Image (cartoon, rainbow, N blue to C red):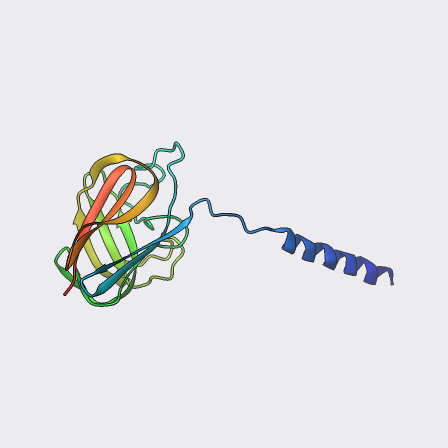
Length: 174
């Protein structure tokens, strides 16, 4: 009888611990942008890490290594029609958006395996597209931010800003 009471109390204690855990806001909040370009909807889902008085480029985000381009889950980019990115054909679909930051040049990567946590299971064999862009100095941005700029009827630039760096690439649609 004593064992039953102890086991029951232990069970109640464990269950109460489970319920006592409140969902806390993420330190790197989720964000999403969506823009129609021509007849194509482009959607980016990502998490927004903050600088928080840290050295971002070269330390928090090492140079010359694959980065998830955000925090938590890998950043994704999705198109409901075929597009051209920096002149390269990309079939409609959903992709992970990875980058390899460098001091003078970044590599942007669209990877077919979009359900990933970070870049831990990144495989170059699943890359749909890789291309290079030049980073630009920008005004300080505390949280990683994606935006759409230079929007015209059939093209736009996707812009990533964080800390004092900005990179962008052109998307064209039919």
